[in-house]
Picture 1 (tube, rainbow, N blue to C red):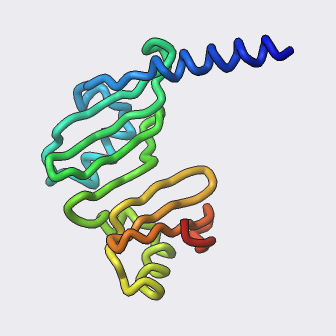
Picture 2 (cartoon, rainbow, N blue to C red):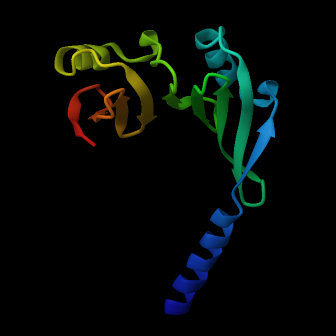
Length: 145
């Protein structure tokens, strides 16, 4: 049994070590990612689009779009955004769920939101003040990270 566990661990390590980032064209992104980027970041100039793969390029893990001002958007393999980072500004307010905006306004002096991450467990927000807040899937504040 111990040999099987060790072999499995070695195999999984080899797979993750083979992860690679590949530069792609904007048109190679999933349609959902293209539509999101065009609708919400049309005024920004794209610097690059990337695709992260594993298993020797056979499995797409996620995509990333980077703009010249440093803004980054990460998408899952279906093209749904998972993380937005603003390096020189804040996340556009209309992308932040209303309840999260209201909470930040009321409790953190309306500090600009510079990172917004969406996971199945909820949302993670980083403020310009470097505080990290966690919210459940219903946008209820659950604590600081």
